[in-house]
Image (cartoon, rainbow, N blue to C red; front, side, top):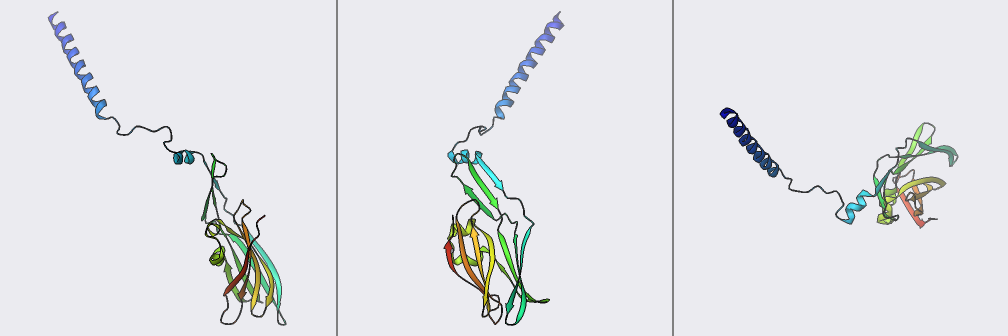
Length: 199
């Protein structure tokens, strides 16, 4: 009987010690920062309501072929427009609050190639940055080169028209430009007549 009493007393002391140790362990490991379940500020709220719209990569190339007469000789003019698939343009659209749209899309480039038979007379690239000195900063940041069209030829230059726009908006500009295809200025691009053509 005495042994049974000693055994019960020993077990209760050990149990008591184990409970104190457990409480101490719990208090030692309390986190310094509470877990946040609700946004603290409006900016956190906006992040929760942001819908990301990512344009798919586009591997299509739009080709335009045309014969142009320079003097008495026929030349071939080719315009190749394609996407850079660079995800270089990020535009935040918060007009439909509380939903915010984050559009991520790609810029385009147009290659202009003038040939006579198999000889390449001119090869030049046109991008929206070609016209950067005359474009609004925000427009330049969010726009893409939409199209380039051949217009005519005169003297030492090929003349074109270009359209640049911000996708999914009516913010668009048109411009005229010309490229020298011969002389020491070969490849030099001049542009003028930048105008708003938005709808």
